[in-house]
Image 1 (cartoon, rainbow, N blue to C red):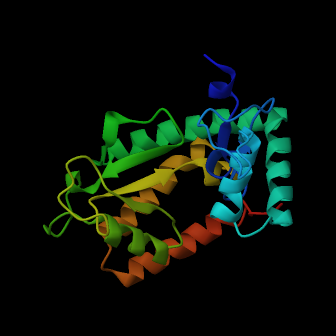
Image 2: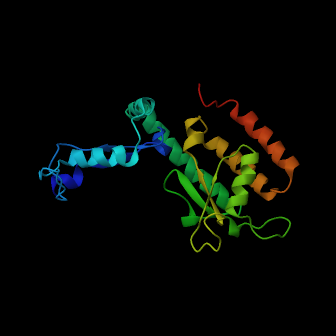
Image 3: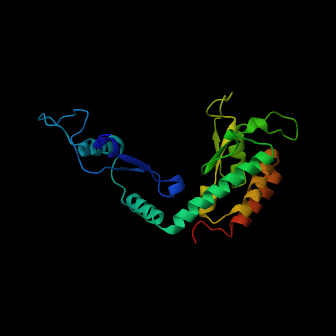
Length: 223
């Protein structure tokens, strides 16, 4: 493996790293680009020149100092022992959450999860009034009314469009960051299921919203 194959790394900073949206391109010792790109004078450009040009003015309008600072904070947190504990807890929460969904009759793609999130095929869940299964779009929009955030997501062999979908994607990183652990997971899944099974009942949705906010009052976004 030549040096330029391992010199460049794009690191996404949000999601489990808990940093701002965006990325960072890192490379080791600079080197002539392997693509033969040249300057107007005919000189081979260095790889750093290609990277700089691709970022600005290629994809970025200007440096955002506050975002750069936020990235530094995120990397600083990742160096602490608490970040390792956080990562371990994310996995515990996610695995249990996936199992709780399975126990309630939802089909979790792959049968569970080995990372921070899970993909759920809603077509597997029978609704109490006998109607067809929920769409991902309806599930997402309904859960938002109860202050629960998920994303609609296509599933394997989906028969609906990407704008509607037959599934939802649920993750454990955000709730873990706020301090929730395994003992809270069954209740969270119960609340999600309650909303989905009563998606057309505004009274039930409002009740769940109040319960969600009461529960999360002890786990503020900023301590």
